[in-house]
Amino acid sequence: MKKNILDAKTRAHTLERIAQFKAGSPALWGKMNAAQCMCHLADQLRMAFGQIKVAGVPTFMGRMVVKRLVLLGMSAPKGKVSTAPEIDQLTAGTQPTTFEEDRETLLELLEAFFRKSDTYEFQDHPFFGPLTKNQWGKLAWTHLDHHLRQFGV
Picture 1 (cartoon, rainbow, N blue to C red):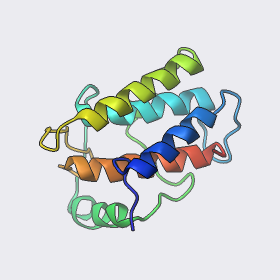
Picture 2: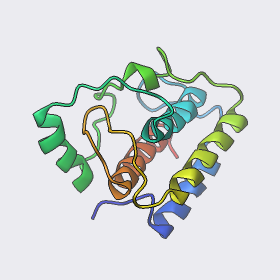
Picture 3: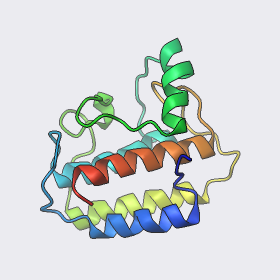
Picture 4: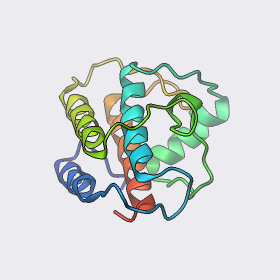
């Protein structure tokens, strides 16, 4: 069964992993460093809230096939999925300040996500299109898990 950041046990475990994430943690794959990753994780939530506008190219394949596979539990292959430039810390994403400040920002954004009502209108995902809070919760967990594993957390 697909995990969801909205589930209390999954949420608690994920928050523990974020607390264990260290500024000097080396990446096991990919190009981001730990500080950039912390900002990237926060940028996904900013995107969901509409604070960062991402030019999307939703396709039939993305909305109908890949979206379903991801929401059912398919993991992103390591180093094989590119992100939107607006949330890519190597191009236009939010740049790191200090690791601890950026971690606190991520935690604040997660808390804001948890507090959103089930009817909150999230911004459409640039590839998957409209998502409910529950679907964003699944996607957020997948994204967090992928990048926390990238840094061995």
